[in-house]
View 1 (cartoon, rainbow, N blue to C red):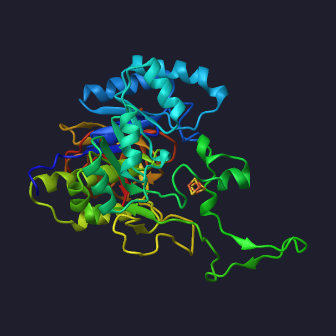
View 2 (cartoon, rainbow, N blue to C red):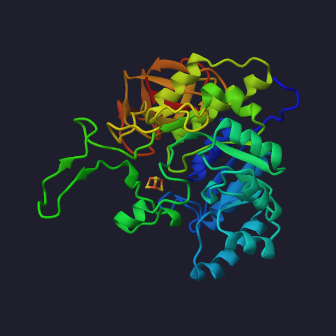
Length: 404
Ligand code: SF4
């Protein structure tokens, strides 16, 4: 480990308030979220103004950071509302905003004191572009995903701005911020936060007078998913990622589950900490955990420039994750009883695993359960039902109960 390297921030997605809590409790240093408008996840839960205030308070109470994505490409009609929203974010005390549109950057600089991070949607692929945005007042540049280790290191050497890169999650097949596929095929614009993920669809060839006759484009018997990218995972090369000198390591996935956020954050937290404790080696349990979470086959993307394919051509479906059954909301040491808020169906005699924010995971069989009124029950089929059950070890609040 080089002593000159500053420990990078681990930055996690917060699709809603619960995911924000999970990300921070499982070890993220910072989170990013979108408001109800102006961020590129129009169909995520996203945060209302009241929720933003609550999220800022929660994050700052833990001495961590919170960034607001305001990364749409704005049209004239958006400007007045955007101005009001940016002033609100400034008053709310978010630590930075993520911006891709020069108009939004200009507006934020004119009206607020907000720190500005340039979103990956702005597609910064070279040090000149990074320096240009830095000269315009941006303190951090989220680099395009389409860069190699050597390119990232060169940008770091030639630009004084903080750099942020994606280390894990879904990838676009297009250059970030430049895809019109969804808009062209469905009218829903990826650059306005409404992408339909058309690159994941199965494609055939149809001659216009032969409706209903599908001619294979020719990959294999399962179809053609010519544009369906694998998921990024740089864990095996995390030492090299850290040595590139970037300031922030970002996990993709504001639309993903609490289970995904908790699992991925815990793995990367442990890996980053082990590097700075001079104890870095890839552990099987980290890889097992990343493989348990729903994902497409993993790729290192462009980072290694090794020419390996980054697309998965035989299916668009991610692998199934281990089922997420509930969140531990309370634990009573005197009776060794956990209170669990249900998220998936589970029943007596089922084997389950407790995935804990800090401690080791452990498994057990559910021997009995009671509902909120103390009545004995055999299964917990209702959404967010509160259940009490005996546990074989003390269990941390916010542990996730999953099927084994
Ligand atoms: S269609 Fe695919 S490549 Fe294009 S923006 Fe959407 S996810 Fe990205």
